[in-house]
Image 1 (tube, rainbow, N blue to C red):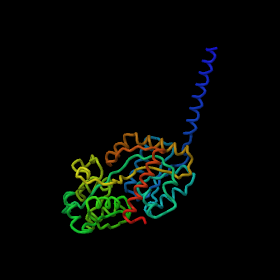
Image 2: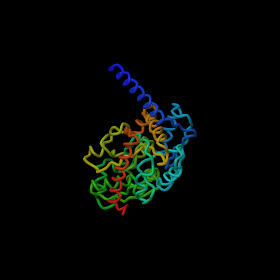
Image 3: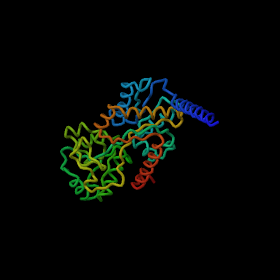
Image 4: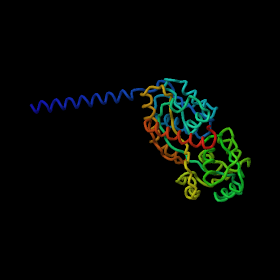
Length: 327
């Protein structure tokens, strides 16, 4: 009798394993039948575009997907054009979108019905640090110089930002609040134009990402005074962090480097892309790219990404309200 019970238990266990494997296979059974399109909200050559093209190159070179990968630049509206386009694909699982902080801040600023809750979270691959930057020939040689100049009188220094209410604008506000100064914020059409204005001497300081102005930094046209955050960048080992200098910001607003899809795509596609992007992050090519770009290795899957994005959106809303951008 005991032997019979044992045999039955073994058969049930084997059956359960077979069913479990079958269900797992079904959950990941979907594969793309058409080229995968990665939607990017910024122009070619910008940070988001470079990340998307790097991901596409890794997938194709390593044959991680059975179809080609295309990058679609849908610029305009501070990212809303790309969000609207991606959402309009509804249940079509062949479109995914590269996202940054604009994915959270723009809907808040524009008070749109479309926001992060309308999208399926896929994966965050990294976070990108920002930095306090000045013209290479600026008289501001250190953060101490900048703090003294900024506090000399209200709006003594002009701050070039890619958009009102954007990450660099929020950082400038946080920095000014911490050091007791008020910058004169000048808005441009994107961080690239703000950097160009900095090099042209039209603004005094920017707070964008050094990964996007690497060439200008290396050439000496832009000087980095401090890195925003707690860790020095590998590419700028001699540049201190704000934390080291005793300047503790409430929020560093590190830039998200992640991917989402329309909220209507099937779960099988979400699982597929989450796994695909995870395999991208595990390649030597991505690791080399991330190191070169000074990205922090932040791997967050779909479930955790929902909570992560909700918290980041809440933090941004608080800051934008404090700045008077949100009423």
